Length: 179
Image 1 (cartoon, rainbow, N blue to C red):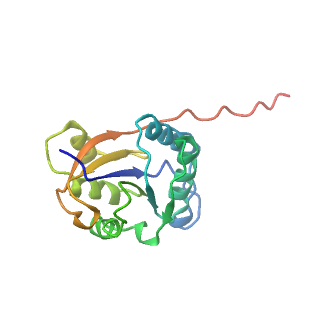
Image 2: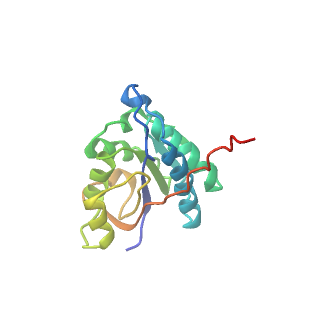
């Protein structure tokens, strides 16, 4: 299949659960280690987006900020309230608005919505990656979808899942307090 466009779907890194509204939850220590690993994975696999669409939640913004620092590029980012708590159909509608000049788009969002989006868009080829997405979409999970058509034609079964990865980082060493 020759892809007309590519969609990369990144679930935010592991978040903390302080007593704050859901929209304001920050990344946990593990999330702060895993988000840069996602950026390195994207760089190593030459998955540099032309445009990033990111939910406005704190944890998605922090995930993208840490990932892009490892990417080796600085693509334009559109922070969009509609990507927060949007269902798959709403995310598809949002992605249909992507300009045709954006050949590769990265969406940073939440589960279960990103999982539902990937399962909706991906043609069921019986691949192991698709089975893994169906089973679980962990934090910092990255799905790569090659689209059959253009952004306005995005819909059910119009993509092929070409990769699914879950990059992990190493948490920072605790500060030495003996000195």
